[in-house]
Image 1 (cartoon, rainbow, N blue to C red):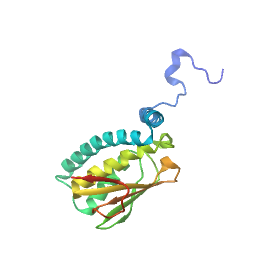
Image 2: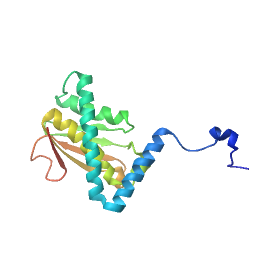
Image 3: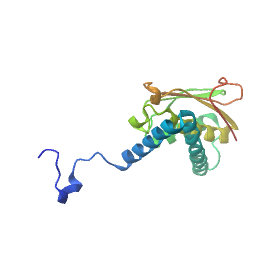
Image 4: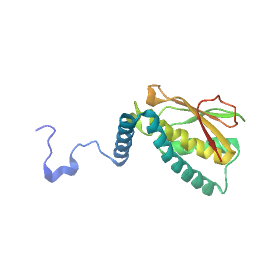
Amino acid sequence: MAGSCVSAAVGECEVDLDQAGFFRNVIGALAGTMEEVIGREDASAFVSVVGTRIGDDLSRQYRTALGGTASDLEAVAAVLVDLKTRIGASFEIASLSEDEIMLVNGDCPFAEKVLGRPSLCMMTATVFGRIVSQAKGYARVRVEEAIATGHGGCRVRVALKRGEGGDDGHEFFA
């Protein structure tokens, strides 16, 4: 019988299940359920709370690993790219100036589970905002394009000065 599995050999059955995939499913289902039950805006707010905790923890870990705050612009941008690379994204620095860091990405750590769940983009926005604001004193993060909303990739603008980068986005202070 094709597709059947004998209970004695259940560990050899073809089941698409591994730790990373399982956690992507959990996060995707949680985000989707929150967006359906409480709405996209409130779901984004909840994800932002989680992102704040994770961002603060990652910022502390990078400070410890680097022997202090990486406050020069190149180091801050490198931290953002590194952390996303470690979790399965492919962020790259598109541009870097004293006013902003522009990042682009072609792979989401949430894989296909992010599709139609833009509240998950608040994880990136908040983690980036916490890390950059702790290093530079301020950040305004705007996700301009997102895989979650059907774009082929992500485009994230991190303004480093108040008044730069427009009025939209999310502000973070040290």
